[in-house]
Image (cartoon, rainbow, N blue to C red; front, top):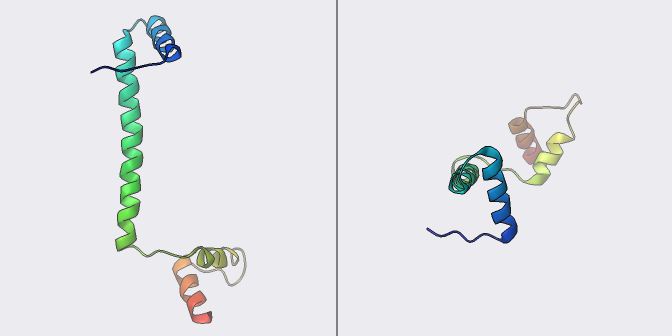
Length: 90
C-alpha cells in the first residue's frame, strides 16, 4: 500500500517518530487506527439513528419548542404527554 503525504505531513510524521522513538510506519499505522475507530463509531451511531426513524417516534421542532416553553411552569409535563396535549389543542 502506498500513502501520499504532503511535505508538511511527512515532516510531522518524521518528527513525531523521532520524538517517540518509533518508526514512521508505526506512527502512520496508529493514526489510521485512530481515524478508523473514530469514524467507524460515528458512522455506526449515524446508522442507528437513521434506523431508529423506522422504529421510534419522531417529533417536529414545533412540538419540541412548545414543550420546552412549559419548563418551570405548572403545565410542565413529560415530553410524550406534552406532545399529545399539543395535538389535542391544535
